[in-house]
Image 1: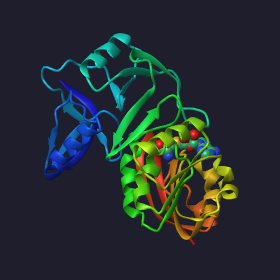
Image 2 (image 1 turned 180 degrees about the horizontal axis):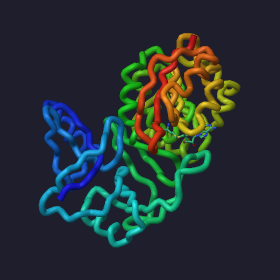
Image 3 (image 1 turned 135 degrees about the vertical axis):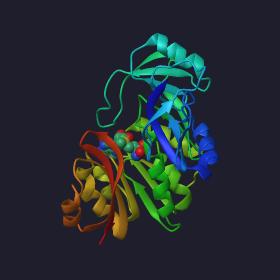
Length: 303
Ligand code: SAM
């Protein structure tokens, strides 16, 4: 039987390295066969991620067919409220401790959602491994998405050792903790107290010594912080434009803003960026969101 699933395509020579990394991140969908596609291999993955696209895979023979779900660390999130399916998933995947069903959309200022526990340990807390970092997350308490993991690596490559970096909407700290080893100082702010508590845990767990967690509304950062920044991360895709002026006040002349936004046409925020005194270096699609809408990242240099 064939099944449509998210897949990551890599050149054949990177196949084994990619397979190991996906197993390490518990992201590989082991119920499906790897696809040979010209000079590349396509690995089936449980969750949509940067660079992934939909492919049709063959199922591994002899495998029990599991209900569709996505995996975040030791938690599976099901698309259906199906306790029997949840028990099957739990029994088939030894790395899982809990199966959840989302009872609400992602909502509110904290960008969180409610879950029902369908099977396993009654918790929404788990640990996610991403490019060698370990992040404690609580899916009901603070926003976390593994979908920006490639973005975090892309920005990491750009950071210089003398840079002071600010993440205005830092959540549990995945950008901050990824970028910190390359930066001189990393300031990571969020409005959600639970996100900040988890971030403090993650800072300790990953032994980074140059991240300052700040519990604050991004609207107040200019008043609170004594610095201008060489680089700013803005990842609040539905409402970020409201905060662009604040980011322009916080960045030094010549500094960079990585602005993530939900858009429905190319160049949607270009006029606003120019008006504020920035010029666009690149605009890239990060992932599709709905028909006609996608998450884009604008890399902006400030004059
Ligand atoms: N950057 C993180 C990541 O990639 O996992 C989290 C991004 S999440 C889409 C947005 C975060 O912004 C949430 O953690 C939310 O609590 C926080 N937030 C929302 N409004 C805020 C505000 N006015 N000031 C500071 N943080 C805010």
